[in-house]
Length: 262
Image 1 (cartoon, rainbow, N blue to C red):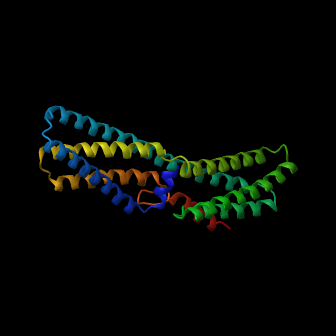
Image 2 (cartoon, helix red, strand yellow):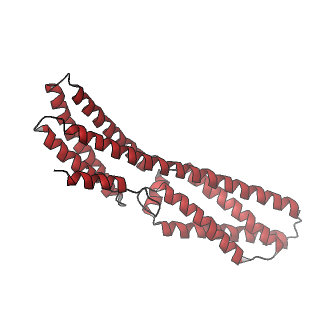
Image 3 (spheres, rainbow, N blue to C red):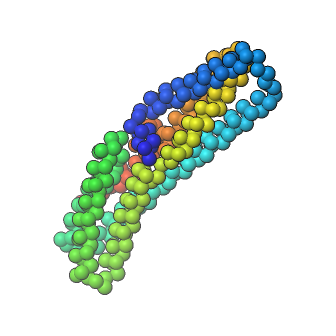
């Protein structure tokens, strides 16, 4: 979680630059080691070295694929939860119309305010936490009205359906906040990716160092390409920043629809 918070705090452009420096630094470190072995006349079988480096790069690609799969799955889950919550709120609003006054008007007002809060994810973590806290306060207020209605009409099936829709709406709120704030790529995977990247890129640099020549244009292209993949993974994993964000349009359309209602 600490690494996820660091990624959220750091601009994605800074993360990209940091990843490029990590790759180039690892290659440079490996190049110096390879050059020292070459100056020491250490005989290394080129075929065996090439096979080991190919295996390390394959392991790095496998690690990237796993990490990308985790981030992509979490992104799809956040999108589906948003659609489910929109449907649950719409159902609760429709069933609220069948509740007696004065609870009906107050519940409708609270649900409209609830949707206004939910129709966007601010990038600032403090602003996001404030919105979540206000959403939970509104939930408490709506639930008090539901309890009051249920006490007056304990055997009403319509009231039972309304309470069921509220339960679903509240549960989806918890699911969305959990997936957005807690279900992130584990920090141990990020650490493992950094370690595997360091040793794999160092091995590439070492191979160039043993050969005694280095094409830095190719290596810079490698660093930029690899860092772009890592940036894409971090963007998918981050719910509040970057270009790959779950569209809030369904919730915004629901907000506009509810505000247009009398």
